[in-house]
View 1 (cartoon, helix red, strand yellow):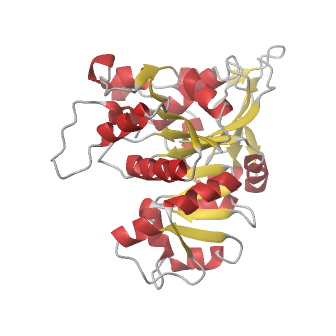
View 2 (view 1 turned 45 degrees about the vertical axis):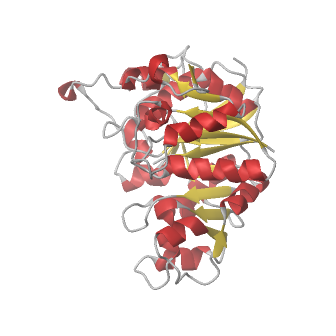
Amino acid sequence: MAATGKKVMVTVRKAPHGSIYVQESIEVMFIFATYDMDLSVVFMDDGVLALHPGQDTKGLGIKGFMASLGALVDWEVTKVYVDRQSLKERNIAEDAIISIGKDEETDAPIRPKVLDSAEIAAMMAVQHSLVSF
Amino acid sequence: MKLSVLVLEGPYNHEASDSAYNFIQAALAKGHTIRGIFFYDDGVYNATKLMDPPQDERHISKRWSELGAKGIDMIVCVAAAKRRGITNEVLVPNIRISGLGQLASMIDEADRLVTFGD
Amino acid sequence: MLHTVNKSPFQNSALENCLRVAQKGDVILLLEDGVYAASAGTARSSLIEQAVKQHTVYAIDADLKARGLGNLIKDVRVASYGDFVDLVEQHPVHAWL
């Protein structure tokens, strides 16, 4: 749906798997994407760990949400950002984070866009509402 | 001002539902409108009538139900509730189960959203 | 913009994360265990001592009283829940949970 409505940002700041916050935040993203709002998503602080490559929850007996994250773009969640410093602090390479979809024409993986904290701050400042996890 | 409130944490274990309640009471006292209160994550446990705290303690779900009786739209997320065994049968009066789309509407139709959680 | 922080700065880096992103002139509201950051003379006081140079910093009165905190960092303002409502009226809010 065209992003014509109010600006709403979902921020994800918690690590995955140790708690359910990341998974239930993704469910919010999927639903919000079907509503008339200008949705953006920011992974920051421990939230960037949700984008860590190679996650496999089989041994936990937990379904996990990797498939959902990989389908964000398919679900029209396209404005997805990640905080550069949070990645750096956790020794995660910017080009190694998991993809959230594929380019329709080239099949190239689409990854969250890496932003500096000043860019994130500027985006936050213009939101109508912010939903944080 | 029209406000919506999102509660992400369960009662008693964490202060979030108390902060949310105190904030909402202050907003009502100032004449603001609460467009809606949405319970998500473990926040869905706020709505169970099965809680039975000692008499001299606050009864959190009863408190929420009393706010609902004033006509405030109070919603428990269906997906989060199903995971946690919160069904229509255990809800206090004046709170209903519905989907995350209701949170989208509460955000759209309010001037502000305030989130309380852990 | 209004930023709320509800975590003790001794256990969690939410306040530091918030201060890294908050823009000059943004308002910081400490509530729940977040109010421990407002205490003077602690090993974490410097966070708010620095923050008050760029931000107006509030701490919720009921949370301070519940925790027996009275010796606060200079320039931290004590806020009622009603003041919290007024701040929300003035700014969009992000909760650093």
